[in-house]
Length: 436
Image 1 (cartoon, rainbow, N blue to C red):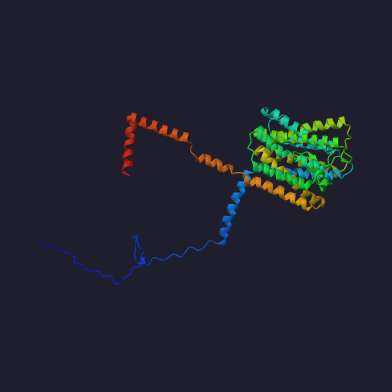
Image 2 (cartoon, helix red, strand yellow):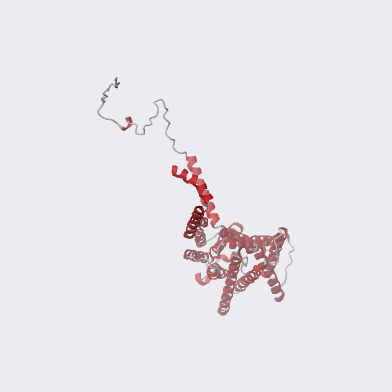
């Protein structure tokens, strides 16, 4: 038998040390003629800027989405401030207009705008609102009127700066009423930011009871945040202590009225169109102001000049948009957070006073403005992302769902074992799974 053997050849290494580069640990060595790819070039500044801009846009949209209601309320205060500028311009024209006539004309224009829009867009029940919230709509107008009455009565015996500080207590009270009657969360950081904003208002208004002298804000028209124009109706000269104390009490009644207006708007929520709230408030103000002028025998001034009519139309239109944005904001935001934006009206008032009347603000007013703006920004930034919580809740599987799923699987297994047809149909699938 012939056997063939392969000749053994000894391979002796020709060097003593070996590097890892000479070893192909993977067993897959690239061919010698494979081109070597160049190293990736670093990212350009344009790409980095585009990524940063994209991240900034996402964060900005998230902030806007989480603070839509608060931004709407802040926008409404801008329209209120513009309305107050028109009021101040109108008061400089002859003949002067009484406050009640101004309220009546402005609310008539607002009412006509609301009803016309709802009639054109076919909003149901434009006059009384939906049946389920008509009582709340009536309360909204009722509280709004008392806020208006408290402001105008107190200004007969209080300076504008004192009345302004009292008026801006309403957002603080609204935070409490929202927690008590609507079950909204009350956070200490919101309360602290509200106190800081009120302190900023005090620095701007500088009431005589604290600073002992007249405040420059007497030349600035303000609003209480619901559309009630706050301006000097009658200078408070030679006021008796009893009259001043009574005026403070009536002013606090007005604060409670404004607080009730905020709370009822939030309680109504999305169950009524925003203009239903405005119609209820404007109609009651027209009725009460007309009765007041008749009872006090107030002379009604007819507009005879073109600029006079233009100012009245501006007051009505600005008031309409301000009321609409305010209602939309409080419908979408908790009353405690939403009313924080009311303080921004002082910032608008001071800015427009500089633009239209060339009245430079003092250093203390600038400092108070910064406090108000920073407090509002703090409240806006500190709000948690509601969309994140919704996604977390959708991703988290409750224990009940797990147990329910296990129970359904167990029932399915029992059904398969009992039904011969299902059992035969499942055998090929089981065999295929076991082969893997």
